[in-house]
Image (cartoon, rainbow, N blue to C red; front, side):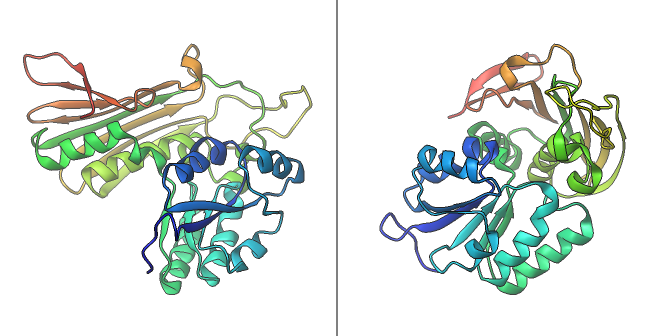
Length: 299
């Protein structure tokens, strides 16, 4: 693989020009001079025109196949609706493009295995866009966990509470297009936290529930009811011997907090406990026996 630099950057195309790309992916590309946004693809021509000025990119298309076949593109970021991921990843792999695909990778495990095999066979770099792994506080928490500073790792605990409107989620509220609700949208990040910090899971049990029917769009029109979860809860055993607990909901009234909601991801070790909070990306809470949990800035 060639060495990339500001003079020879990785040429990246974004497929899916919505809010996730605008908030996460484009700023990340701009942070590293070794990468460059060279093309944008979206089904909406109106949104493409907006991104032309927002992102200062002139190569715009509604055809993802053309992007994947473009010799001037090295890698693609896929941030489209869940049910489209498989087809786009397979096209990218076929044309030798490196892939970063938003979570969830696909609607079920069989699709994910097919996508994984295609990328492996093509010899391309591929990853899921679990972007929160790279927050400074999460990287520091991983360092503490893996260096032994927390002692023997015993418990992982995650809460993700949001106060979202009970109107339609659009395609996200239908299993055939989204795969699942809160579980695939929010709790999946926290499962990744645990695996990154503690290693692979050994066994898992849990439950999901749907409380909000979501039969009205935001402008008051009728729509078919949701058939995905808006609450999920899991308990797991980790191969290392640790345990994990997750709970997520989009219906926790009063948990707005400027759109960030409530995030609490915690590890209890034999020497110390550490807490990650999404809205404080440069700070952890740490505590030992005889010392209450207290904020600590990331070094």
